[in-house]
Image (cartoon, rainbow, N blue to C red; front, top):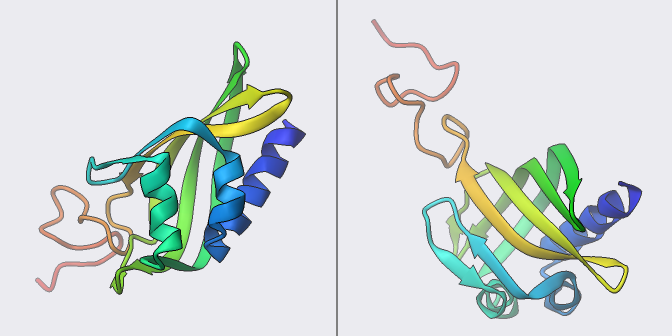
Length: 141
Protein backbone atom coordinates (compact mmCIF):
# COMPACT_ATOMS: atom_id res chain seq x y z
CA UNK A 1 0.00 0.00 0.00
CA UNK A 2 3.00 2.32 0.40
CA UNK A 3 3.43 2.50 -3.38
CA UNK A 4 -0.22 3.57 -3.69
CA UNK A 5 0.28 6.30 -1.07
CA UNK A 6 3.41 7.48 -2.90
CA UNK A 7 1.51 7.55 -6.20
CA UNK A 8 -1.27 9.70 -4.72
CA UNK A 9 1.18 12.10 -3.09
CA UNK A 10 2.89 12.65 -6.45
CA UNK A 11 -0.43 12.81 -8.34
CA UNK A 12 -1.92 15.39 -5.94
CA UNK A 13 1.22 17.54 -6.25
CA UNK A 14 1.07 17.36 -10.07
CA UNK A 15 -2.66 18.23 -10.10
CA UNK A 16 -2.17 21.21 -7.78
CA UNK A 17 0.78 22.48 -9.84
CA UNK A 18 -1.03 21.92 -13.16
CA UNK A 19 1.95 19.79 -14.22
CA UNK A 20 0.54 18.20 -17.39
CA UNK A 21 3.88 16.56 -18.27
CA UNK A 22 3.96 14.60 -15.01
CA UNK A 23 0.23 13.84 -15.19
CA UNK A 24 0.73 12.44 -18.69
CA UNK A 25 3.04 9.77 -17.21
CA UNK A 26 0.70 9.07 -14.27
CA UNK A 27 -2.47 8.49 -16.29
CA UNK A 28 -3.08 5.24 -18.15
CA UNK A 29 -3.36 5.52 -21.93
CA UNK A 30 -7.09 4.77 -21.80
CA UNK A 31 -7.75 6.93 -18.71
CA UNK A 32 -11.35 8.07 -18.30
CA UNK A 33 -12.81 10.52 -15.79
CA UNK A 34 -16.45 11.03 -14.87
CA UNK A 35 -17.08 14.41 -13.29
CA UNK A 36 -19.62 15.23 -10.57
CA UNK A 37 -22.15 16.42 -13.19
CA UNK A 38 -21.78 13.24 -15.28
CA UNK A 39 -19.48 14.62 -17.99
CA UNK A 40 -16.74 12.33 -19.32
CA UNK A 41 -13.13 13.34 -19.93
CA UNK A 42 -10.54 11.34 -21.86
CA UNK A 43 -6.87 11.49 -20.91
CA UNK A 44 -6.22 14.25 -23.45
CA UNK A 45 -9.22 16.28 -22.26
CA UNK A 46 -8.07 15.89 -18.61
CA UNK A 47 -4.58 17.10 -19.51
CA UNK A 48 -5.88 19.90 -21.74
CA UNK A 49 -7.59 21.60 -18.77
CA UNK A 50 -4.11 22.13 -17.30
CA UNK A 51 -2.28 22.86 -20.55
CA UNK A 52 -4.77 25.57 -21.50
CA UNK A 53 -4.72 27.07 -17.99
CA UNK A 54 -8.49 26.63 -17.69
CA UNK A 55 -8.18 24.71 -14.40
CA UNK A 56 -6.14 26.12 -11.53
CA UNK A 57 -5.82 24.88 -7.97
CA UNK A 58 -4.68 26.69 -4.86
CA UNK A 59 -5.14 23.42 -2.90
CA UNK A 60 -5.58 19.79 -3.92
CA UNK A 61 -5.49 16.83 -1.54
CA UNK A 62 -7.04 13.48 -0.74
CA UNK A 63 -8.37 12.44 2.64
CA UNK A 64 -10.46 9.54 3.94
CA UNK A 65 -8.45 7.32 1.59
CA UNK A 66 -9.65 3.70 1.59
CA UNK A 67 -7.58 1.51 -0.79
CA UNK A 68 -8.03 -2.17 -1.60
CA UNK A 69 -6.34 -4.29 -4.20
CA UNK A 70 -8.13 -6.72 -6.49
CA UNK A 71 -6.42 -8.82 -9.18
CA UNK A 72 -3.56 -6.41 -9.97
CA UNK A 73 -5.66 -3.27 -9.64
CA UNK A 74 -6.24 -0.92 -6.75
CA UNK A 75 -9.68 0.52 -6.08
CA UNK A 76 -9.69 3.55 -3.83
CA UNK A 77 -12.49 5.62 -2.38
CA UNK A 78 -11.45 9.01 -1.05
CA UNK A 79 -12.51 12.55 -0.42
CA UNK A 80 -10.89 14.99 -2.86
CA UNK A 81 -10.45 18.41 -1.22
CA UNK A 82 -9.77 21.35 -3.50
CA UNK A 83 -9.71 25.10 -3.78
CA UNK A 84 -9.58 26.31 -7.32
CA UNK A 85 -11.40 27.45 -10.40
CA UNK A 86 -12.24 26.33 -13.92
CA UNK A 87 -12.28 29.15 -16.47
CA UNK A 88 -12.55 31.61 -13.59
CA UNK A 89 -15.50 29.87 -11.90
CA UNK A 90 -15.05 28.28 -8.46
CA UNK A 91 -15.06 24.48 -8.39
CA UNK A 92 -16.60 22.33 -5.62
CA UNK A 93 -14.39 22.21 -2.55
CA UNK A 94 -15.02 18.52 -1.91
CA UNK A 95 -16.07 15.52 -3.95
CA UNK A 96 -16.17 11.83 -3.14
CA UNK A 97 -14.04 9.97 -5.65
CA UNK A 98 -13.58 6.38 -6.70
CA UNK A 99 -10.19 5.89 -8.34
CA UNK A 100 -8.88 2.83 -10.15
CA UNK A 101 -5.15 2.26 -10.40
CA UNK A 102 -3.59 -0.38 -12.61
CA UNK A 103 -0.07 -1.72 -12.40
CA UNK A 104 1.88 -1.21 -15.60
CA UNK A 105 5.37 -2.71 -15.53
CA UNK A 106 5.58 -2.40 -11.76
CA UNK A 107 4.32 1.17 -11.43
CA UNK A 108 0.81 2.40 -10.75
CA UNK A 109 -1.16 4.39 -13.32
CA UNK A 110 -4.51 6.09 -12.78
CA UNK A 111 -6.95 4.35 -15.14
CA UNK A 112 -10.23 5.90 -14.01
CA UNK A 113 -11.77 8.36 -11.61
CA UNK A 114 -15.44 8.92 -10.86
CA UNK A 115 -16.40 11.96 -8.80
CA UNK A 116 -19.59 12.74 -6.92
CA UNK A 117 -20.66 15.88 -5.09
CA UNK A 118 -20.77 15.67 -1.30
CA UNK A 119 -24.12 17.31 -0.60
CA UNK A 120 -23.94 20.37 1.60
CA UNK A 121 -20.24 21.12 1.02
CA UNK A 122 -19.26 24.45 -0.59
CA UNK A 123 -19.96 24.41 -4.32
CA UNK A 124 -22.18 21.31 -4.15
CA UNK A 125 -25.96 20.99 -4.21
CA UNK A 126 -27.71 21.31 -0.83
CA UNK A 127 -28.56 18.30 1.29
CA UNK A 128 -31.93 16.93 0.09
CA UNK A 129 -34.83 17.78 2.34
CA UNK A 130 -33.19 20.83 3.92
CA UNK A 131 -34.96 23.45 1.82
CA UNK A 132 -31.71 24.55 0.19
CA UNK A 133 -29.75 25.02 3.44
CA UNK A 134 -26.18 23.82 3.70
CA UNK A 135 -25.04 21.32 6.30
CA UNK A 136 -25.36 22.76 9.81
CA UNK A 137 -27.34 25.80 8.63
CA UNK A 138 -30.57 26.44 10.54
CA UNK A 139 -33.91 27.64 9.32
CA UNK A 140 -34.81 31.28 10.12
CA UNK A 141 -38.09 30.14 11.68
